[in-house]
Image (cartoon, rainbow, N blue to C red; front, side):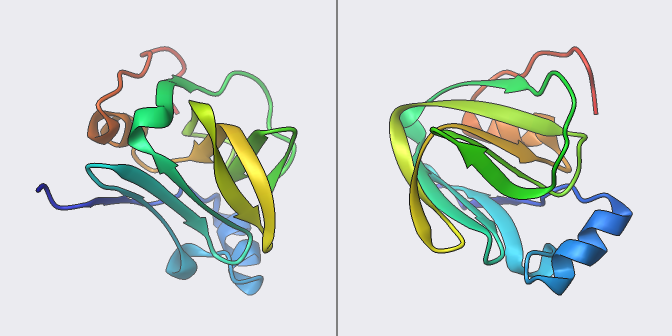
Length: 133
């Protein structure tokens, strides 16, 4: 059984400091890939576990980002500390997550990554080379 791979959220300098004040900074956040699941935690703001067999694809975020933290609606969730390095995962069947303790369904999960390519490689997925960030 391979060792779990742990990845860091990408934070903008100012955002990392502010999110840290709310218990969502680097010390309390992580993304862990095991042979069977993906475990994502952004401090107290977001927690979700996705079966790897449910992750259908990965792509880079296209477009602007107007918020940082954990936010979304109707199954589409953005969990980020930066507007760069965002990887979007398509999930089917939808996974369960929690946003500030409230249960949510997750069919699309976007996360800001320090190492987007390494993260996708750990998941066994390819990431398009366009828009490196």
